[in-house]
Length: 125
Image (cartoon, rainbow, N blue to C red; front, side):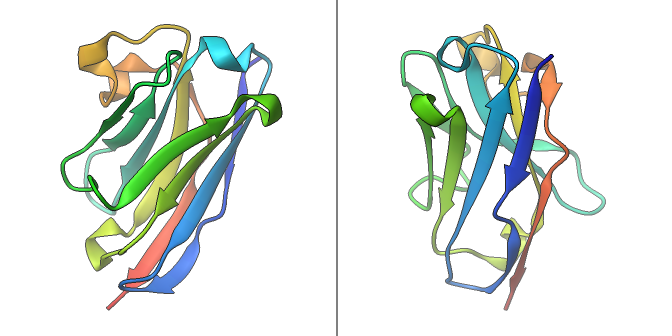
């Protein structure tokens, strides 16, 4: 049974940094494509970043140059380092996983079958 548990959310001021973690279990970590998504109040869930089994990464334009996705396969943990945070980054952040995700679907909600419950990130101006 695949389980994903996010942590690291919190409240910071604009310009600050946070690092989110996602601990995975119940599957062979290195064989899954992993992604970070976020959902702001009243908005659709959107893809933020993904990392595939070959280490290739994809980022939403809104976070390029500010966020970095990485993973530690030995710890079955996915990370999202978020720098230069803006109030518009405020959202619940979700970790997602799937055995195979086509390159065009890596930032699409429908590309993933397994989800964590999310961690709240609040950025104040």
